[in-house]
Length: 73
Ligand SMILES: [Zn+2]
Figure 1: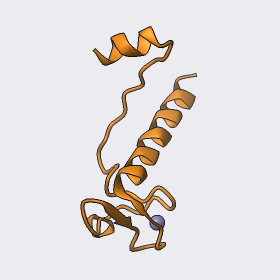
Figure 2: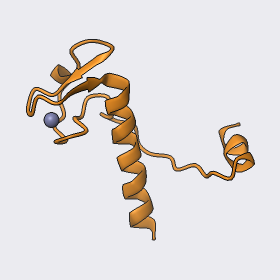
Figure 3: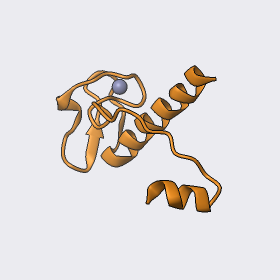
Figure 4: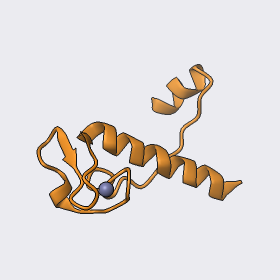
């Protein structure tokens, strides 16, 4: 279904390993369960970066997708 939708709108899908995307800091890369202050709040215990937890995970997923694209070209 996702592939169908992507094709319909002229997009393509890149799959990435989601491991630690919710626990890794999108600013410095520090991985820790302690970074998750709550379901909604991400606060890095290393650099102090604070943001919405979903936004942080989405940035990590985007970066993995970009890295995957770069390594495949
Ligand atoms: Zn950090």
